[in-house]
Amino acid sequence: MLDNRKELIQYRLKMAKERLSSSELLLREHSYKDSINRSYYAMFTAVRALLAREGQDFSKHTGVISYFQKEYIKTGKFDKKYSKYISQAFQIRNNVDYADFFLVSEDDAKEQLEHAMEFLDAIANYLQKT
Image (cartoon, rainbow, N blue to C red; front, side, top):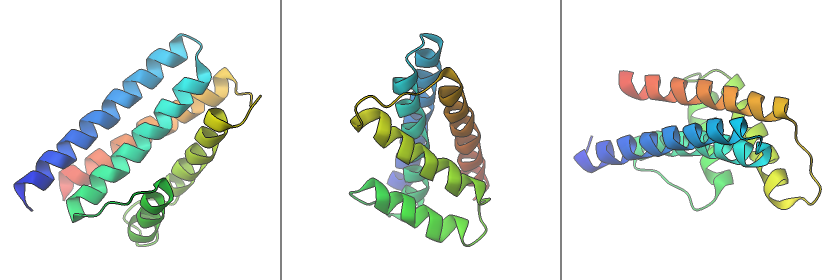
């Protein structure tokens, strides 16, 4: 693997961890919509770390998610639940960012944070092994 890919992977994992940390802080401050946004971006950035390993990237979120599902979920490299986690997070993030009067609860934000933590751990472990 090219050295710059390794650096990019590490950078993206670091950014994913920072976003996860932001999500935790925002949850504690009862800023549930923003917490959900950061949880989604933690997952999204972790997937982009996987793509960096292969020299892949896409200009749209749907392209990144579709590639992850095709190359990592359908091939059995990751459990199917991770496809659900990122797809659900993407949908909820779109709603909290763009839909007027979309309501979320503390439980919604906690669930997204828990999914993001598990998701990021799974990707980090996978990258460490390969």
